[in-house]
Each structure stands twice: as structure tokens, then as C-alpha cells.
Length: 159
Image (tube, helix red, strand yellow):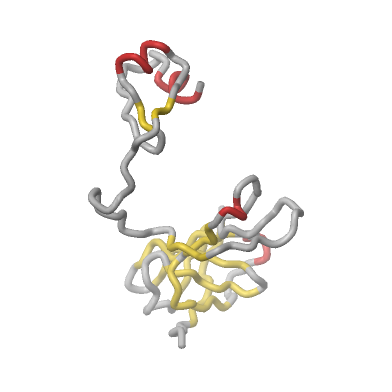
């Protein structure tokens, strides 16, 4: 059974709520504002919790009750998400029906060690001959692009 803690919205503005009374909230815990609106506890202080609203914040008012869920933020993952448009919680907003997600993954997760990762064995052709010749990049690999301001780093990365 999930633990539950109840608090009250003290202040709301710009998609951020300050909540009093959620003394047992965890970092990155999902909060239930009611009416299907979910928040994310981020700023934990002694007397209040700062939460980001993941949805329509216009229906939230000062004095409204907020409940902890005991669950950390997680989103659905799987091939059914390919080509779909989803909100911050992975819910479809493209009018193409529900998702048949295979599983949920936590948003904040410790990365697997380098030994257990799949090796990069497929080249990624950028189409920029100097980059492809001097700095071969593997598909799925990260690459750091360093340079002075206004030298075209973003243009190289995006194009």
C-alpha cells in the first residue's frame, strides 16, 4: 500500500506550487492535485514543498488539498511510443488512441555500468566530410562539440 501524506497549496504561479504540510514527501515523488492533475515534488524544505505541475495548472487554487502518491516519476516506454505525441507523463495527446506501453521506467535512474552496456558497432554518417573523416561517430554514442561562440557548433550538431 502506498503511503499518503496530505498538504495544502499555499501559493501557485507559473506552473509551480508551494505546498504546506507534505512533510513526508520524497524528492521526485508524484503528487496528486485531484482532477487528474499531477505534480512533481522538487524543492523539499522543512515547512513546505515546491512542486512543478505536470499538466493544466489553471484549475489549481490556493487552499486546495494535495496528496503524495508514494511513487517516483515514471513514464511508459516501448515501441508503441514511436511516432506519437505525448505529454510530460507519457499520455498521448495526438488523438490516435491509447498507448500499449510495454512497461514504465523511472525518469531518474542510475545509468548501467559501461561493462553491461551494448557496444557501439554501427557508424553514424553525418554527411559532413571533415567530421566523418577525422572524428568517426558511432550510432548511439555521445560526442562533445567544443568551440568558441558563433563558430557553428549548433549548426554542425543539428544539420
